[in-house]
Image 1 (cartoon, rainbow, N blue to C red):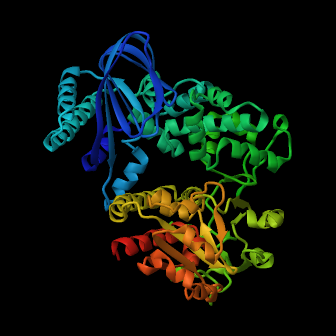
Image 2 (tube, helix red, strand yellow):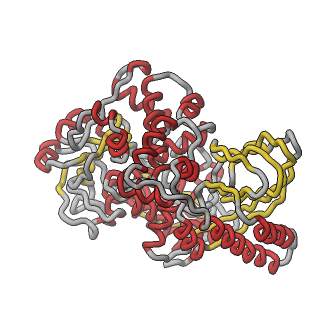
Image 3 (cartoon, rainbow, N blue to C red):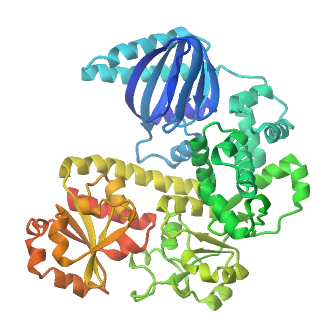
Length: 594
């Protein structure tokens, strides 16, 4: 943990205090396992207990401070001495716009999310701030709440100041990485933190972090997590062991946290990974051996396994998990062919261009209109349903990205170039992260996601204040009927989940993404606001509906609460550029934001 980096981000943070509590647990009591709803700082005044944060143990006593981010699973147990502690719940973020340097530092450091704990050297000033914070928090006046925020900043300042002075002796830079790698390879199932590892190797966390980044281009804890994920992959492929047993075998007490971590690092859940590997190999769990295709020939696996640093370097390479197995990218692909137009959206959002793409019927130039000004020379590769394999061979891409639409020709695709098959209806944010790993744009992907998160966060409260619970629906006239998109639909989730809009009762369906309703059934839908999705193919039917008496009798129509949207943007291209346009249109409709 580099304190200076944390100070930079704390200095620019926008802060909201959620709660300040002082809690007492008698001997033998315990705190039920719970998931933190925001970031939290815990400070032990007196007593002894075992604190678990996402399965990592902290033995707390007087003067011990610990920090954890939102979503961390918290448990306090083994209270062997009357435990008295403060807990401060807060939310912090960087207000946008801010510099790229700060965004990069935030992605790399995550000061408001990471977990750490240590015994402070001077408890008195910290206790003064905490007691005053609790006293002010219990007041109802606005001035008191502002005082709490001021005191919290002073508390952080004192905390970071003390942490800066916790310097350990420097270890030999020539062998520190090798020592750490060997230790983690052998003890990955045991509790290991950056601080405990640094103390074990007689060096500072900062030195160890710097040497790891220089040697392997990743930090020690990232390396540890990759070891654990690799071991978990082996167990998932080769055994029928349950998720809880596998999590414990690789060092995680909490299987829920392990599952979230596995998905964050691999892009899929453990169960999906196991299923994909079994399908890819056709073997039973006990006999699975998965050989991943690569973009570059890999050296002897035996030699790599015998040298911990070679193994570490291999772990730092990008491994992409997809519907047909794993793909190890030993170098960044320069020519990418996409067999679904929505992936063009993702690539362009990350500042990259596809070398080739399937075309879209109904457009003059064959590519989505909303992307055409951003595209340069893109080779046409047939259509989504019928990719042109000869054109694909002539393009000679480094990598092909397809979806389950092309499952019948997947083997043919792999003979042309390494191929990744992604789930077409997967959340666009997860797909963006996967493409970010493929193209070496992981940081850029997170920035796009954070910018979107910041946008919808602001809009959500404004929309709630403006609409006061009025219902909003999205319908699509087609095939002489009307398609109602439910809460389970990926774009409807933007309206109802991301923006917090209220669906009508008929749209509340978590299993089906849509349902068909007749024209005569529209009055039963009875929504306050309608987004009507249209395209050229069904424009005539849409126009015809709006001339009927049934349509004109709708309350929303009479109040002019009907808004037309392009089905291509809202439905067909589920990428960050399109979804931001959907959000912008909703804001323009309801908030007059242009």
